[in-house]
Structure formats: C-alpha cells, structure tokens
Image (cartoon, rainbow, N blue to C red; front, side, top):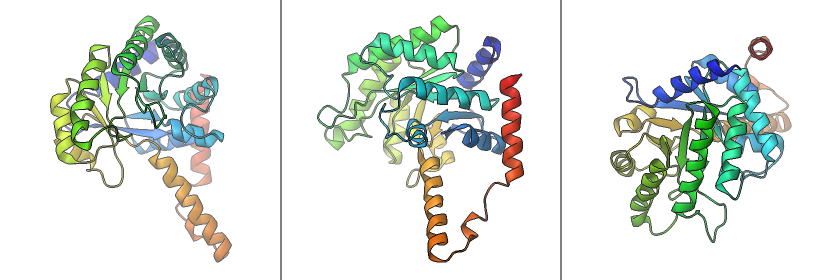
Amino acid sequence: MDLDTQRARARTFRDSHGEAADGPLLLANAWDAASAVVFERLGVAAVGTTSAGIAASLGYPDGEHVPREEMIAAIGRIADSVALPVSADIEAGYGDTPAAVGETVTRTLAAGAVGVNVEDGTGDPDEPLRSTADHAARIRAARAAADDAGVPAVVNGRTDVFWAGVGAESDRLDRAVERADAYVDAGSDCVFVPGVADPDTIEALARRIDAPLNVLGGPGAPSVPALGDLGVARVSVGSGPMRATLGRLETIGEELLAAGTYESMAEAVPYGDLAALLAAARERREA
C-alpha cells in the first residue's frame, strides 16, 4: 500500500467517528485475511483486528503472548487483503516503556494499519491497570509515532476499568472518565471502554468523555442503533465473531461424531466465492 492510499484510508476512518446519520461506526473485528474479506464483501466500512482472535489462530493465548513481529505480520496481511481502513489491536503496545510502544505503532502503521488500540490493562490480577500517568505517556508516544509516520491514524485509548472489574462498582464510572480524560489530553482520538452494557452507564460515559466513545458489542449489550441513541460513536465486536466461528466448528464436530451427518455445514461460504474473494485480495497485494 502506498502512503497516499494509507493516508486517504486514515482520513476516511477518522471522519467516520463523527456524528453520522446512520449511527455509530461498526468495526468488524477480523483475525485473518479470510475473515476480513468476508466482512468486506458484506459491506462493512472498516475492519478492526482482534488480538485474541489472531492469537488463537496462531496457537497462542491472548495477552501479548504472540511475538510482536508475528502479530504485526498478521495485521499486515489483513490490511493488504481489503480496500478498507484497518485498525489494529496492539494490546498494551508490546513494551515496558512509552518508547517501545511508539516503536510498535511505527511498525504497525508501516504494515498498513490506519488506527491503533492501546489498552491500560496489564493482565496481572494484583495490579490489573497501569497507572493513569503511565498509560497517558504510552498514548502520547503512540500519537507521536503516528504523527512522525505522516499518517493521520486514529489512536484509540482503551481503559479496562469495567473489563477488569477494578474497584467498587459504584466508583467505576468516575474512574473510567478520569482515565479517559487523561488519555484524550495525551492524544487519544477515541476512548474504548469495554465491559459495560448498562444503558445508563454508557450514556453517562458518552456524555462525560470529551471524545468519541467506543464500546464492545455482543450478547447482552444494546443493539448498534440503540448504542447510537446513547451517544456511542464506535462499536467493536472484539473476539466475538472468532469465538462464534469456533462454536460453529464445535457444532459441526459434534454432528459428525454423533450422527455422521453434515447439515451444520449447510451455511458454509461456497468454495468458489471464497476463492474469488481471496484471489481479488491477492491481486490488490501484488498490484
């Protein structure tokens, strides 16, 4: 992908976070080239990567267990396979320092992404979140790396206050807003608050955070139109589609083993359609 094309996709992606008459930006999360091109065929406006999905496809658990170069290579294959903006889930940024996060962002943008998602979760149950100041410094480094690359990438600062269940439930809204404010001041264009499904809480987050709000959609969450009515600008689905696909695979396996029949595969994408989609993606890569 040439720089002009990447910049154009970045601008399109950035503009899609504004108030749109047709509701929030729906970010379909892909884990490989095939899932990305299927989403593209269905008409999504943008693709996000799912770190958990990519990790599972490569045989790793989630949580930066995938080596950075393997993760960036997977992101690059997805970005090369679609003619859409691709936002990359780079977890906590793959590094202990802001400088390391900046390097990860530089490499991720070089692979073709036009957005990055950087989370403050640590995966450590004793210290589930980085300090607000530490993560703000990491966001600042991500923003600087994008600016230095000359790509108007969307930096999505994620806080895991709700996702990790940090502190008393009654305090989480204020904690999340405090962190969001710091991340926006550091250069975050959008704020991702996964783990919240209560409409009143979502509405309060959208009203109090001075940036577009991204939430995680899935079973039990309000619909995309309802989230738009609450003020949400962007809806991600994370690893949900990948895990749902594995759930279908379990159903196929159970039917094969129990009955020796194949009806669970009746809704499969036709072989020829998939081959054509991937051939078109390959032509784009080689053009």
